[in-house]
Image 1 (cartoon, rainbow, N blue to C red):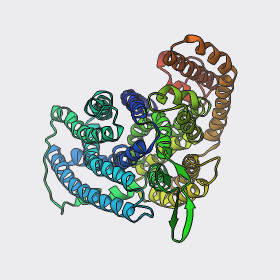
Image 2: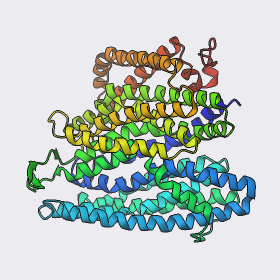
Image 3: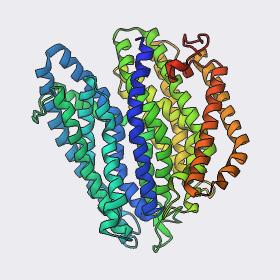
Image 4: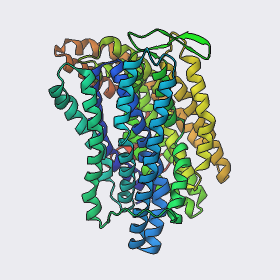
Length: 559
């Protein structure tokens, strides 16, 4: 199978598994919204969940593969299985100890920040809830990293499905807890129910590790724990983990920084509406539910990002690395360009659907129970701005993998180091604008991600002395923008008639679902049809082979 087809085939396999986990994740978020709405309880839970979520993005979806996979694969191929298993045991032991220390340090820092933040006494009950949930869920960070390490082992051995399905365990446990367990223990008491959900998250982390054990045993992988600090290979890998993790870019760290800023600058009902910091007295710019609205908006853009693009990036990294190891730079550049085109194609499609259908999507997914129509308006406003930058979030993952294939983990770190303070500064500048408020977090993330993609592409071009942003890629992007406009136009034309018809269906859930899925189908069909007419080869790569027809396009694929 040619390299292009092989990467796309593997990406589709991972995407199918990831789709199942993302669907159950959406159901989990629907139940969270129904149980807690947009308020401080959900804000506190979202804040606490940011810490394990950050580690998941950095290690589970990013750092572990480029750091551990090459070393483990090389050891397996050159020194045999026994040496590879020893390497795994040493890595597991040292990583566990290091992460336990990190968890303790993070916990102390969080407690210190919230103890010293002005107005701590007035916000004592709210602060206690936030700190208690954070303390409960911090151990989940450790299980996430262990799962990432074991998943990397399975990927090296050609097994992608078990690792891709582990998030379903977390989602299933939370779904059962939200739908049955927490209400059974504490009916009509959301403040106590949220503690049950937090404990369930920690339990789910342990179960995720347990789910991978049968697949590891089936492939003859012995699990051991051997603490040997002096092992050079392990120390080399652990030394690479921080720069690779930090190099995941402004998207992951921007989201994490957003949570800190948002929680600190949110006014909690029943507390003073203003605060004094370094002699400057100001009113809190955000109100309860701001972090929850941002979190739900992020869930919506992370759905296509996780299903489509992270799957593509995971499958593309080995192909990039193989061509780089052979010094086949023209082929490497062609492979990176193709992955970029695919990522942007998927990102622009998902982005235009988010921008045009933000409110009906949020209403269909979340507006139940304690989640009101006003909450829908707040959340969908943030969703629109994330939709404008989704293509950049997608392209950023491909640029990062291109750097990693060259063995370069420092340049992404430098780029992130450049844009993270810009991201924070832009957020702090926009958050005070009345018409923007919590949407400032989406605007700053999109802006810095776009700049990060452009600079990363230019640096890669200089590194390999070949153009990545060539006329072919830019021409494809121009045609993709036309398909995006076609999709938006089709939705705008059909929407009034379609919405009027669905409103007559009677059943609220049926009406909402029909309105959303019908317009999603219209927008997607218009996008794909226009792409085929414009002879974009990405359609041929993504559609099932039996649907590919017509003459070969510019990339050699059928259009």
